[in-house]
Structure formats: C-alpha cells, structure tokens
Length: 386
Image (cartoon, rainbow, N blue to C red; front, side):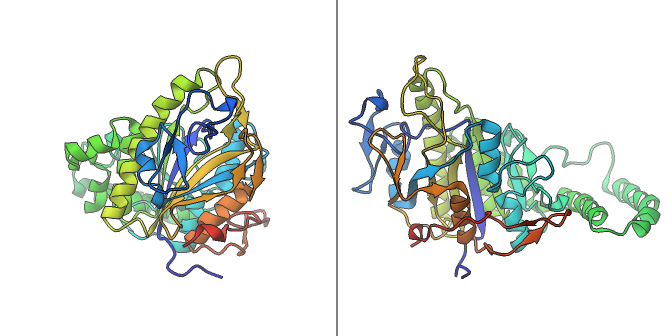
C-alpha cells in the first residue's frame, strides 16, 4: 500500500568508486581483515562504527545502517548503473534513476527551479532521465561554488531577449505544428523552463555566497562538503531530488591512508547536512541516502589496499520516516559474506521509493513498449521504517 506521510525530497550521496565497508559502517575489530582502522561507540548503545566517522557516530540515532547489501556487479560502470537504476545496463535502452521516477510520479514542487539536480564531477552515470522525456534529466553542476552557470544575461537586456525568443518562436512554429509529438514538446518545455529559471528570484538558491562563513566551514571546504550545503539549500527551495557525487573511493592501494582522508570529508559534510535538515524541519520530509556501487575486499591486498567486493557492503538511510538507531543485516566475522537479512540493490531502491510514496508495482513503458517499474521487482525493507 502507498506510504502515508511520504517523504517529499531525496538527497542521494553517492560514493563513487566503491566505499570500503570495513573502514566505515561494518567494522570487524577482532579480525585481522580490519587492519589499523579503529572502532568507536556511537550515541546508540548497540551501534559501533569506524573511528573515522565521529560526527556520524554522534548522530547514529538518525541512521539506519544496512550492512547486508549484496550485488553481483563487480565492475564500476555496471555497479554504478545498477545502483542508480535497479537494472543491469543494456545496449538498447537507458533506464531512469530514482530522481527521474520521483519527478515522473510526483512532479516538481517549485516550478521556477529544476526538479532534479546532480552535483559533482562525474555526470556520466547519475540516475538520469533514461527513456523518460528530457524534462526529467537532472541539471548537472560540476562545481557547487560556481553557482548556476550561464544563468545571467550577457550582452543584451531583457527586452532584447524577449524579442529574440519571439523571433525564434516564429521560426519554429511551422515545425512544431508539423511535428506535434511528445519529444518535441518536451524540448520546447525544457527551453521555456530555462528562461523561467533565469528570471526567477529562486535562482539565489544556487549561490553559496549567501551562506555565512561559519556555516560553509561546518560543511567543509571540499567540493563534496559544499555540494551537501548546496543540496540543503535546494531542498529548502523545494527541489525534488539532489544527488551529490564524491569520487575517489577506488582504493586498491594504501587504503589506510586514503580512507581516513575520504571519511573525514564525508563525516563532516553528512553530519552537518543531517544537523541542518533537522534544524530547519526538513529531515522528516527528506530521504537522505548514502550508498556506493559495491564494497571492498575485507582481505587486505599486497598493496595495502582493498579490491572490488560486491558480495557484501554497507549503505545508510536517514530521514523520511526511516527508523534511526538501526542496524539491519549482518556479515560474517570476516566481513566477506552476508549471513543475515541480505538486501539486493533493487530491494534497497524499493525501500527508498517506498519512503517517497512512489508506486512500486506500476508499470511504465519505454518507447519500444517494454515494461519497467521503479525498482525492478525489488521489495522494500519495511523493518527500516518507524
């Protein structure tokens, strides 16, 4: 059945490269696979996580940690695509991501801003619109500190722009009349949206300079931290879906040098994000997702690193009706295999979709008339909800 009081927004934090679970949320302090990573207590008695994540440890009562994620996709591109879409990649079709599904079913909340935004350097696979119309494609922002580029008039005033748009409309009129089809209308709407955004006061949501120095410092100066701050601002202005990508988790070498650095940035940014969402009353309305394409081998390789390991890894949910202070699933004593409550990627995505009140069983058809659903036969993990 549909979820009552479903979440309105999603903030999707993607750890691109394969986040190590033993050095984040599924530590094994008594096993040799753990290496030098320490385990610390949290503000929930039965939850312990990596010492690299002190801010999140202080907010474990907000977190549902899934330590039984499992997949068969052990290559980056395939794993990334599967996590974003719930489907294996195919040469004949692109599948929509969760943000696109949310927009398709729920629509925009603020007509003057994009419904979906991607923040980060790697926009090749970001849960795009897939076979949906172009209007469901996320707006990509490479650098959160740069604001929304090409959104100000240059070399002309508003009157000149209006005149040029009217002239372009006259040129296009015959084509639109002859080809009055969904794809053409979608592109027309996309351009109309762009003009409306340029003229909107809500454009200030993209300008991080409006935040005071102390707030910006709390999130961290790294692009990921500032991306999380931008995500919070966009949610405040009723953008439906925001993804923030954080690259560099492919740690085949020197994992105990790389992981602390990456975790420090993740911990500071996500900790600040959760604190602020709760402070402004948006945490209950927003599903915050922390995930990755797969885990990393518990066994430490000859280069003091960890290799690809889709058999077991961790993801985290918060807000949006999720039951905080929860550990779901379990791996064996070495961290190599799931031994309790396995969660496949479509199940994880079905859980997110359920939190947002999306219809899990409703079928939508691609242009080639193939049937697809939001989470491809996945079943939501209802134990994660309060």
